[in-house]
Image (tube, rainbow, N blue to C red):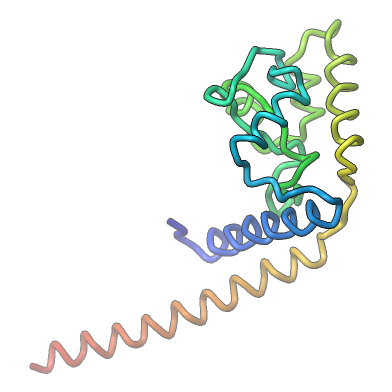
Length: 171
């Protein structure tokens, strides 16, 4: 549950990035990444049923999905084909909100680094995902708008609650 203006605005950014991702998928000729069971199977097949980072064998029940470009206000990765990759729970937990290349370089044995990096870059290219898609101005405006609207609504309801309490105490 959101506890502050920034929490509410960040939730708005995540919803925005999911919805833009659906549009971006459709515009590139894909069914939006939901993921349905078949989409999970397709995602796993793109990485020979392994974690894109550590190569651990995965199936649909052990699959954890990661956003190569984090889905947050800073990085603005979309929830879309080409940005969502299969990974194990351990790698997903360790990577957190860092860019994938940084996590990969810190984690993977150097002799496997270039092969894994190339595999991820090939996948992004095959899916025609543009990591340079610049939504910063739009997202910054949305962040401010959502925060302002949320605080206006919260203050309105706070005044109503104060009035209700005053009425109750007059009784």
